Length: 308
Image (tube, rainbow, N blue to C red; front, side, top):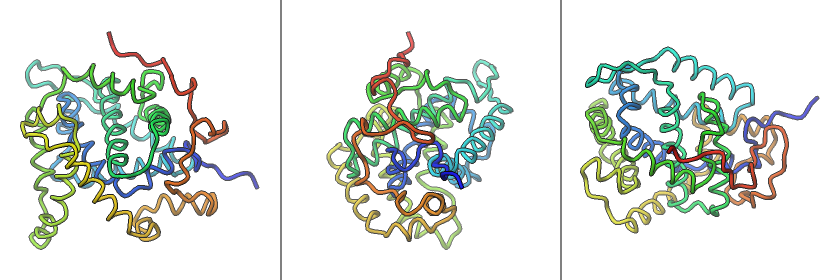
């Protein structure tokens, strides 16, 4: 019997440890707020789905894709990527002002969605108390050029470290705006429709998650949405408090929730593959090998350049 397939990243990657953190749910909501600020990108979502009726389904599908690509086999991850590329290849959106019709799989739109997600995951887990060095953060960004490839991007055109990611956001900033579609996303995330019996839970729990995710946005996003940004120190304290509370829930309890990506990965690879923050290690110690994401170009890739 051959060695079990560790998947695209594997137990020794930064991704393997970070994506098991419960604050990823808050990070996912932050990503939605941020992604909505690119008018062409969010238009592609709103014109091809009933966001208000299917927002929960969209959120769960995104979580399922992240779980599969992070902890599934290489075959499962490639299959998930092919499915996403196929769906995107059929979808178009229309600019209501110019009448232009464009594909939702344009590289610039895929790149925005990718970078908004990776930035959100990294920002929220780090600010909420998960101990990561800057080198870990750079490696995490670099590892996810692999997930960018899955959705149809050229990995060489994707930021590979914090400096390149920051340069990308500076370059795209003039294109961002809180248009009508972004306002719809904002309204939904603040007050998602639920059955009457669930309204108290929405007010008690969901609003806390949505407000925290919104508050964790970068200052320019607050400016675009038109609400004053709260003090960074206050947001960090709230993120740490939320992280401390959520991390008291035993892993086995959290990981039992469907679709159980982590438990299936541990069953495939053995108990030693269990994700844990203490396993984060010096990126230089990551060894080459199939299924193990690793730093490329010594962690200082120059293959991505700010446009212009």
